[in-house]
Length: 195
Image 1: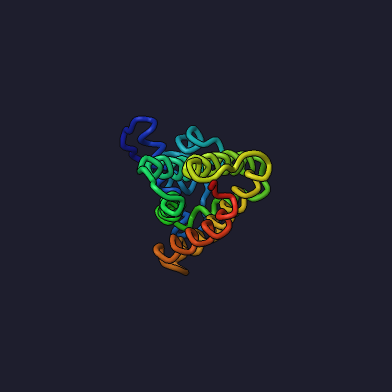
Image 2: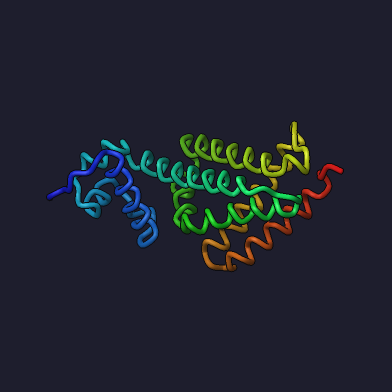
């Protein structure tokens, strides 16, 4: 099997892209490091060198989703906002667009890792980053500190996950998802808005 020489990071990205394609087309049940090697045109040791095992590959796939999502949030947050509604809409747009761009395979990755400690750590890290981004976006308009603030933020992220999952499966359009999430967040956060 001839393999094109790529730098380590380029090879890793190629393997992740092929892994996402396998999940999208065939589901996570067919994703093994051996099958990934075959589809990517590399030897098995290369996939094992990059990910260790199947769970390691799935965790890296989930982490790359998180990194993309946080980068989108940070990019969206660079736009100045002049109102509470505008800040919520910017955040909602970034969240929905990120999940859609990642594709429906993220749901399958989470399901495949369900119950594993590695997933729980990755989810916790991702939720914290999403929560911090939301707090930052809303900081000029509401104060969400302490345990009450954490609970309110967790509620918003739960809604964002549910609505974006519908959009990623094309059950609803991206525009509808953004409008629904914005409305849901505005409605529930309104009680905490600073006067």
